[in-house]
Image 1 (tube, rainbow, N blue to C red):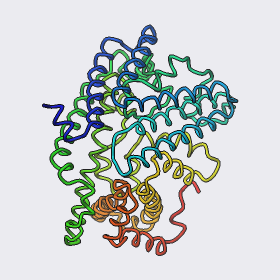
Image 2 (image 1 turned 90 degrees about the horizontal axis):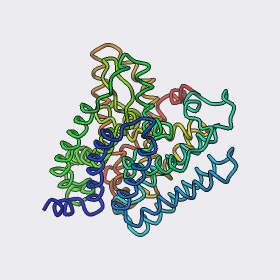
Image 3 (image 1 turned 90 degrees about the vertical axis):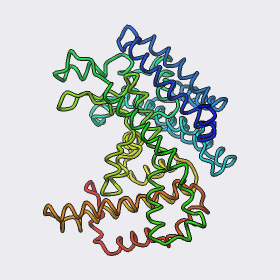
Image 4 (image 1 turned 180 degrees about the vertical axis):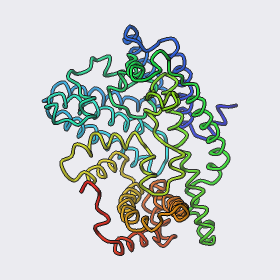
Length: 452
């Protein structure tokens, strides 16, 4: 009965995702309790991680799962045979090309379908493999040429086969990630992630408790799931371009857009929060202690829902959305490119997401909005300095941010070019017009970043 309800509501692909995540959550609790993180259990933990990851991955994706095995084996061959000083470029290029080919395949044969397919874990594999390749290549560089993050994560020796495949196929992240760097994963396996924080705090003899964080995340998943089934499935985001909605009054359509966008966000909030809970249940994600001595479990958090929902600028929205991917783009691209950093990050981020036109409508416009937002903060924000004016500015900023983010992300959710243009035409491209007017009105120097 339960299985039938899941299949009818979610479809086979998403039902498999949910089942594997729930299994991973239960296994994670047992894994943390009975195969504790310590140097003596390292091999045992690696073997269990790989075997469970392979089983769960194959169950969820069937024969498509072999794409993950293929990209892992080919990348391993490249990192073992190519010149070490160039492997970061070679592996980066190969993984992006491989991912792009798979994206194109699914886009051609399943056009416009929002299925949960192998491209999701493949995107995470690209992050992991490039993290590894860059850290290994950094081992040849002079220490003074590396920044603090690179010094901390540099690899002087290539991982063993057991470590390599465990890092890629560990059961907590095989389905939807999130991506993590190699050193964080290895420190989770051998317990260094706990010991290093204990040495720096008053909690030296305590075992970090995950109960509070885990309970909170699971409760959030349950609440959001109820809202999703009761609201989001009944009022799908695609209904914004239905003739009935398009014929409604303009004010109603704006409100409808906002609320359906909130519902669509749950499509991401739920799996990302559940994935965070799965990792935490196994002990992965511990990030030290706060000022009150409470353990923090946000190392792998991919979304700050409260921060995002209360954002007063688009930049703040972006900073709290897909956090681990933003970190990856910063670590492997932005901090390493000698010039054209922003353009490079935008280009690779676009390729990484895929080739649906809707992605590019949203990503290009979001970059322009962030650019304009910089000018607004520098020219208009100073006019609202006292307590009451600052509150007014924040309220207005929140309303505009919520409406603009819904307008901005609609093409991203709609995917197809015809659907995206139909939506934008129905709103007379009003968001684009306002933003471009602001570009011409605001002083040009206010758009420059602090670094430039």
